[in-house]
Length: 134
Image (cartoon, rainbow, N blue to C red; front, top):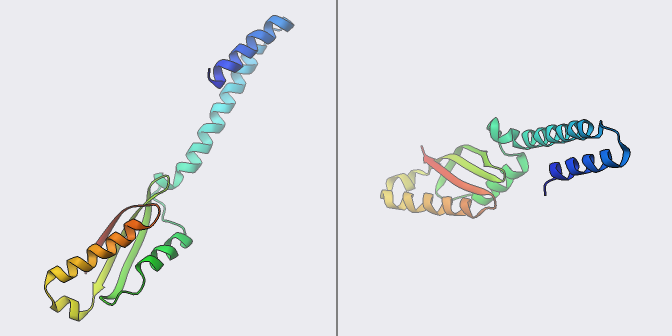
C-alpha cells in the first residue's frame, strides 16, 4: 500500500468518523503538495546531470593525484570530469607524451595510455575514461 493509498484511506476513515466531507479533497491537496516537493527534490539532485556540470574541485584533485606525475607525460593539456549518472563520472583528458616516448614504437605509448586509463577506472565513481594523445 503506497503513501497515496494510505492517505486516501485515512481521508475516508476521517470522513466516516467526523462526517466532514472535506477530508478527501484536503488529503488530495496534501498528496499533490507531497508529489510537488518530491519532484523538486529530484530535479535539484539531477541538475548536475542535466546541465553537464563538472565534478567538484575535491574530486578533480583526487583524479589528478591518481594520475600523478608520469615519466612519459610531458604535459596534461586538459582534464575534465562530467557526471553521467548520479555518482558516475566520465573523465576526458589530453596528454602530451615526452619526446623520447614519441620516438619509440607506438606500442609503448599504447601501453602507457592503457595503464593510465586503468588507474583512472580504478578510482571510485569513474564510469569511463577517454585519453587523447596530442
